[in-house]
Image 1 (tube, rainbow, N blue to C red):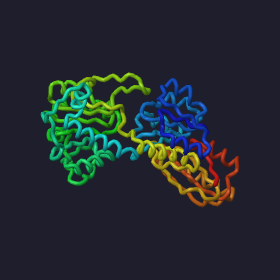
Image 2 (tube, helix red, strand yellow; image 1 turned 30 degrees about the vertical axis):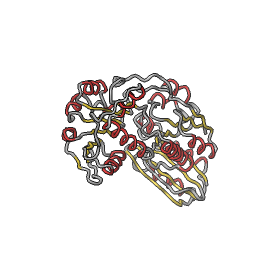
Image 3 (cartoon, rainbow, N blue to C red; image 1 turned 135 degrees about the vertical axis):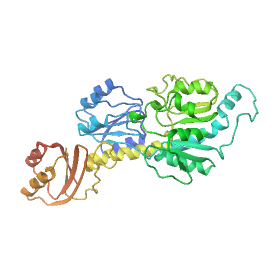
Image 4 (cartoon, rainbow, N blue to C red; image 1 turned 90 degrees about the horizontal axis):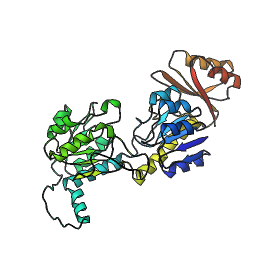
Length: 399
């Protein structure tokens, strides 16, 4: 099976695939929709990061695609419904780079509070500006976290450890860590926080959630950090509030439009501002995080192809069967309607096969069942199963 990996995915992923006999092609850049349409025929598994968008048109062209791996946290760059409709599970790495993002945010908060960006710029220009003007400790100040998921909660823990008070706001009901306080509304958080850090996901409803109204509601001379999604923030509005002096500094790692390839020009309304840190979407780009992501996602893809496991898939019913030690495995993706499992078991009973294990899950319109049997069903039985009214695909595995 051919595996196509884009955007400089860690070599450990390549090694994992090649050790299991896959034919791997690794690209250093992202691919456009046109390029995906051209390249995906013949590709069995696709690995992407955040800059490659997998559209319904690209998915439609991928006749041989069996699984997609997002070697990052987010999956909003993939049309998950279109992939599910074609029977293609999508996997990601929801936890692997959490610590890396949090450490960057902590470093940026301290750097902004001490106004290090302008200090280092003046030193490089030969200017000795030894002054405490505008420079503050973070100890005792209030950090407002918007989005209290995996990254937000770990940021909360580290922030408290260095003396920050933590408040948070999330539309979901999230348990507070340590001494953090939940705020009833975003407006209440903005009115109290000395630093606001965004950690929301890329769902369409979050687009443009932070604009002129929200910046105006922040405390005068507060700091702002966005290491979540570029489309969440109106960068023009942020620039206006920095230039007016209302916002004392900002750090952004994500942008509404990002360059596709290494070395391409970066354009942003936030370039050229004092006490503004701009980084090229490197929140999770540490060697430790990328290595872990490479290992984690490549194994999820291989486990699905080799054993039928859909553990942690973001668009598929989740089934985690044990490793196949003996016998054979029949995996069936089907429409979530009554009678499919009964029909499959009837087929196995009619040929006298012994079921040694069965694992089933449903999600929305899809159902997924993995059945372990002592003897491989006949080719005719498998064909009839695949051709049945509600089956979308049938795949087999052998120990």
